[in-house]
Image: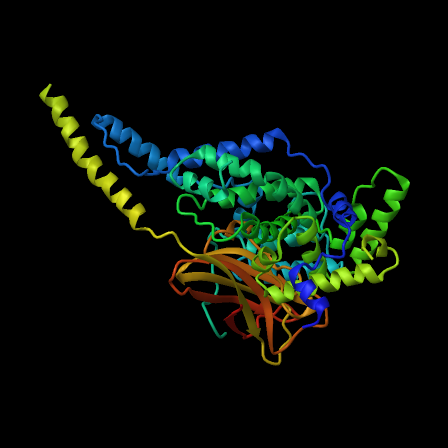
Length: 169
Length: 177
Length: 151
C-alpha cells in the first residue's frame, strides 16, 4: 500500500479545507424550522402510544381494583388496540373505496388492478376519449392523475377482489 | 446528557419523555435529510412525522445496534420515496441542486453555485456518500452500515467524489495544497 | 361488604394472571438483532413483452418489516413502482407498475427490489403471488415470479 493510500484509509478528508464542509452544509442544510404544530402532532402520537401500551418495569405492582374498573380498563385497552397508530389520510380511504368500485374496472374483470391503470393510460395517451367517466379523481380533468389514482387503488392494502393465485400463470 | 441507548432503554420501559428527547435530538437531522430527498418542505414534514411514527411503533422492544443516524438514514430515504410517489411530486437531485437557497455575498454565492454545479454531475452514489460524510456528519463505518455496502466501497466512492472536486478548476480551491 | 370483597377477590384472580402473562411475555421476548436486507423480485415473461405487472409479497415466517421499495433493472421499470405507503413497517405489500412505451423487456428481468428490516434469528420466508402480468396491448400474459435475497 502506498503512503497516499494508507493516509487515505486513515483519513480520506485529510486534504480538504473546512470551507468545503461549510459550503456543503450551507447548500444542503438550509435554515428550516419545524413548525410547532408538527412537534405537537408527534408528541400527541407519542403520548397515545405510551398510554395504551402496557410497559412493565423492573418491579411488578399489583393493585387491588374494583371489578368495574377492570372492565372499564379492558374496554379502553381493546378500543386502543383497535386503533391504527398511523393516521389514515382521507386519500387512503378513497383508494380503498375505488379498489372496490366498478368505475375503475376498465377491463371489466371484476377487480381493479394495474391493467386497468394501463388501459386508462393508453386511452388518455391516444386521446381517444376524455369523457367524464374517465375523470376518476373528479377534478374536471382526464389526465395522468386519474391513472395514478387507479394504480394506487390497485395496490391499496385494503382487501379487494383477487385474481388467480401464485406462481406460474 | 443521556446517551441514545439510555434513552431507548427508558422508552422501552414506558418513559415517553425519553422518546421525546430522542425526537428533539434527531428531529432537525431527519427533517433536513428528508428535505434533501424530497426537494420540498411539505413532503419533508410528512416524512419527518412518518419516520418518527415508524420509530415509535418499535417500542417496546427496540434495540439500537448501530448509530441512530445509521438506523434512521434508510428509513428516511425509503419513506421519502413513498411520500414523493404519493404526492406525485418528483424532484430529481439535479432539480434540487437548482433550488438551493442562494447565499448572501456575491463571492460566496459564486463559489457555492459552482460547487452545486460540480456536485450535480457527480454520479449519484458518489454524491450520496459525500453528503453523508460532510453534511450528515456520519463516519465511514456508519455510512457503510446505512447504505449496506462494504467499507471499502464507501472509501472508494468518497475518494472519487473528492478527486472529481479537486480536479475541477471551479472547486479546486476547497483543497489544501 | 362481603359483596365488595368478593368483587375485589374476583378482580385479583382476573388481573394477576393477565399481568403475569404480560410481564412474562415481555421478559421472554428477546431484544432482536436487526439488519436490513434487499429482496430482488424477478419476472419471466418468456418471449412476450412485459408492459405491466402486479404482485403481492407476504412474509410467512420471521420478523420482517418492509422499509423501502426500488424499481427494477430495465429502464421502463427503473422508477419506484406503485405501492401503498401503509405497507411500510408491515410484512405485506402489493406492488405494481406499467409502461405504455414500446421498448419493453422480455424474458427474465428484475422488476423491483424490496428492502426489508429483519429482526431475530428466524430465517424469513415469503409468499409471492403474481396478480397479473400484461403485454403491450394490456392483455394478460403468463409469467413466472421469483425472488432472490440480496446482500
